[in-house]
Length: 341
Ligand code: NAI
Image (tube, rainbow, N blue to C red; front, side):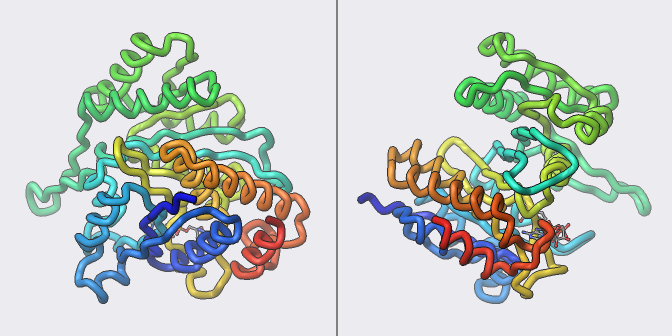
């Protein structure tokens, strides 16, 4: 059986707890993965003198696939976000985040089945900020035809491959006429040239947020630039049970790093309370990606086993973490998942 090297970044806060749980379940499911632990985040400053050591980026460039826990970013100063830096450095241009109701997890909404495509390399996240005069600061929003076109292609191609019917582009091109205007023009051009069979709509982002909380089932695949994708991801997580249940992938041409949407959750870190499911579901996305990209059927089998196990545990409803209304800690929930495999 081919064993596949995968970089593992435990990260900060609840990161080490949820990534450890994920590795345990993936191992128990029999996936042929060899983890390569690498430093990043606040912990890496102490061990390597850098939040994102070169050794980590080199390892990702070499093995081309990783699982990452969340990393903390200081607010209003301090070092630049590790997430923004590594996504840019490895050109992981598409953040792909499926948001679905889970069996047994009751929320205000039913039949939610969305997939967010967030442009991951530019927009306002380039971090180009200037103090032009005392008391006057600017932040530069960048959009390029290349980046807008390739994220649109990723979203439409996903529709074709997964049998999805519609792409909704969220934008604010009424105000940001050049940047969001370019994003829209590129999406339209991609659709007209290659995907005319996929339904398409453009929705101004403020109205889109209202529509999402009113009736999320009217949407299918959501396409947007970086900042909107960041905000809408958390909003959508709230539709299906919160940040503990929404996975994600950062996909580039040659490399892919899988991570949950949530952050390091400093309010619960170190207490064994985190829900590892979002990280585990990201692990399932990783296994499905490897099954396809490396033609490894054992990865597909393990992914299917894990999905069936968490569907069963959640449906039974006996073992649940606190964010989902239960009392189980990370370890108890993980043990329940392994027992259900
Ligand atoms: P957060 O996502 O860490 O937490 C928001 C709320 O959701 C908290 O109440 C937290 O306890 C809860 N939560 C999150 N994940 C959970 C889980 N798995 N199980 C149970 N409850 C969970 O967002 P916050 O507090 O805004 O950010 C904290 C730090 O994380 C910041 O430094 C931020 O920059 C960083 N961050 C990192 C991300 C990444 O590495 N991908 C993504 C988002 C934020």
